[in-house]
Length: 97
Image (cartoon, rainbow, N blue to C red; front, side, top):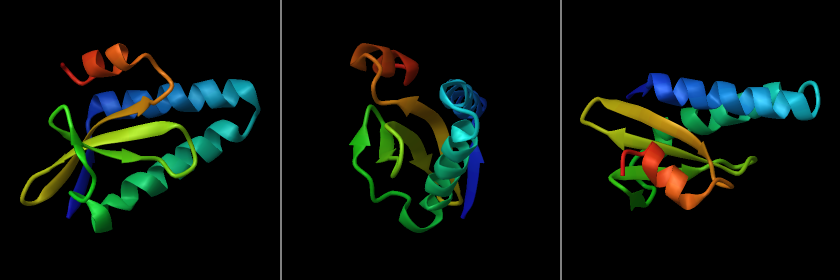
C-alpha cells in the first residue's frame, strides 16, 4: 500500500525538525528519522489505530507527536503530524474541526 504525505504533514515534520534541532544539533535529524520510521510502520498497521475527528491517530514511539491519517482502498494519506503538547483546541482546528 502506498503512503502519501500531504503538504501540511510535510510542513509539520519540518517545524518539528527545526524545533528539535534548535534544542541540540542532531536531535532534529533523530526526530525526523524516528517519525519517518513511525509513518513507514503504517504499511503494516494502518487502520488499527483509534479514530478521532475523522482520522486514525497513531502516537509516535519516541516523541510526543501524533500522526493523523486516513486509509482508502489503495493508499494511506498522512494528513498531519502534530505535537501532542499543544492546546487540544489548536489540534482540533488543525484537523479542520
